[in-house]
Amino acid sequence: AQSVAQPEDQVNVAEGNPLTVKCTYSVSGNPYLFWYVQYPNRGLQFLLKYITGDNLVKGSYGFEAEFNKSQTSFHLKKPSALVSDSALYFCAVSVSGNTGKLIFGQGTTLQVKP
Amino acid sequence: DTAVSQTPKYLVTQMGNDKSIKCEQNLGHDTMYWYKQDSKKFLKIMFSYNNKELIINETVPNRFSPKSPDKAHLNLHINSLELGDSAVYFCASSLRTGVNEQFFGPGTRLTVL
Image (cartoon, rainbow over the protein chains, first blue to last red):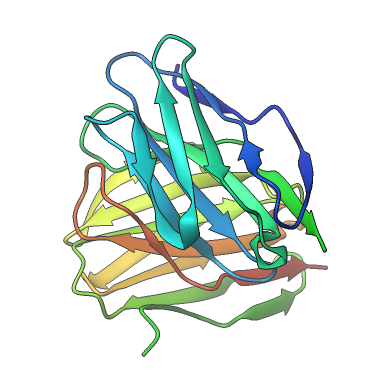
């Protein structure tokens, strides 16, 4: 079965420091991986996706993610965190087939302190 | 213009009632989705339609019935509401099926008393 795990419920980082939000996946076949962000009382917003090609994917708001096939990971990173990055982050995997079905991780709350 | 809109934003109702949530997208997308986010923020897909055709139907109680009158609209009707139905329901759309980014609506917070 396809699954996604985000091992940290919360990540705390100081403004200006680099941040990493971890994600590991388990799929049969090729993984199609996504990161979404949810601000309080809002819907999810797409940040980036990995389909194929370069393992380092760049996305919105200065975020990037590194696909690592051997470690089955897709960690989200940003070189310098902003207080405004504080939100709930979801990793997701697209299930095989063409339905567009996404399986989401449990979410990681990112807290960036001034 | 709001890309994916949902009405109402908040819905408070009694157990046993029937309610509907409406969703509209003005992005010209072919595919629309309903997700449920529970109190622990866990997000799970419920249904998906592509060009008015049901393509994803997860293990959801049959009290939940989606309806897509056209590809820009996907409504969710819930019969005989139960306490466990309390959640935030998100509508989303994507250009087509497959590995496309999904655009989410603002959510409808349903509270069943």
